[in-house]
Image 1 (cartoon, rainbow, N blue to C red):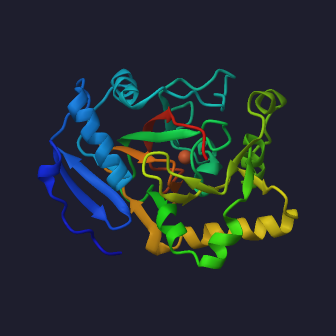
Image 2: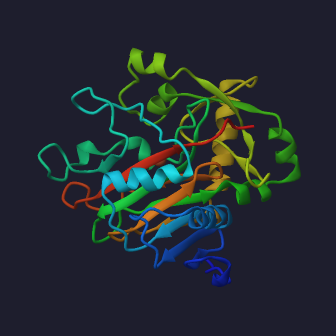
Length: 292
Ligand SMILES: [Fe+2]
């Protein structure tokens, strides 16, 4: 993968360095555990729209500080999942392979994370951004991959663009569970999160660019036989997750990532010793706008 040319860092009131041509930029010299003013907030948002994935290096936020930073960008989202004790996830929840005994365990990892998806697409109003703050990471692996579906869309043939222009897909928490062979959604979860319909070709609300809005929360494409729709979904996902559209992030302790769920698919890679190495990241999700 090509490394992007250096941006003019004077455009931003902090040090920022592009990572790849498909997206990603590293921000250094900014302490986001402290309150940020409107100028810094707006500059972060500009960088977010330009680079899609921001990695703030060397951060150390408490969960309260992470919630406060996150809220600069919108309303915090609750999670549909439940903890082992039946309670909802806290607003800042921990993505981890550690079991209740504090030890690594392959059993605790949510399988869905290993499949390409965009967070909360099973909601009527899905997320704008997800933020992950790395607290403990494996010595090797435990990476997160991002696929730029705006570039994927642009690279489609004109015939394919015409074919998918007006298609709509159903997304649901239930389909999300079924698609990855996870424990089925409970009746309560199905009631709480009924299926929703989104365009397959989404227009980014801030840039007007078209993106491919699919992922493993999708159940089917409306108005198309199931197998034909499934084949089309696979073809589009295989295309937009080709290496040329993908950035693989290797975490460092202290990394604080925020990425644009409106144009990226992402997944975790099971490329570390899940049963022995420790991985803990704190996660917040910000609610976005209804796709069109
Ligand atoms: Fe995710």
